[in-house]
Length: 256
Image (spheres, helix red, strand yellow):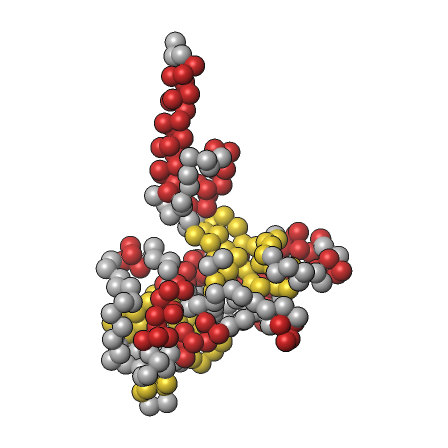
């Protein structure tokens, strides 16, 4: 029979192995993680964990997340204490907030512009596992600031995403300090994969006018100096490449 010390050692080893397995899915758990939360992380890493309402409290700008049922259970006075920021999706080991607004008819930028620091997608697996959206969007704006191609000046899609605010001090009495950006191809695929669940929340809390629209959406991912990844939110949900001068939709996201 194993001694108490041996049992504790074995439990620690098993927990460490479970943490290592979860971290291989993209999490950053430490030894202090609660074992009781492991089933949640397993569900999160394997697919969709949840889609919730992201809101900020007016009194201190603190962020809150509600299920649709929780939000609808609040009184009008209680709801009035918050400003809606968007819809949070937790899936495939990542978490991000989708803005409630779509901005249409935006070009990505000029052709033949080199930005060496942009992420280079080396494989199909990499295409669906890279999530550093804010840094990519920022690099796009910096790299295209002096570029012009016909009527396309700068990086309209990325600039629009970075400048987005769900609410403002002048309009709503509170400033949105979220770091909005273009989604990566991986974020767009998650949005397409669970578009029905996302649109259900948008329809219930905002209206169907705010649903993800069935058209091509720009990502922050670039295939080459002349082609950019976009996701078609139609039934096929294809990730394809387009010339950056074409007009597509922008749905900003933020990573917190």
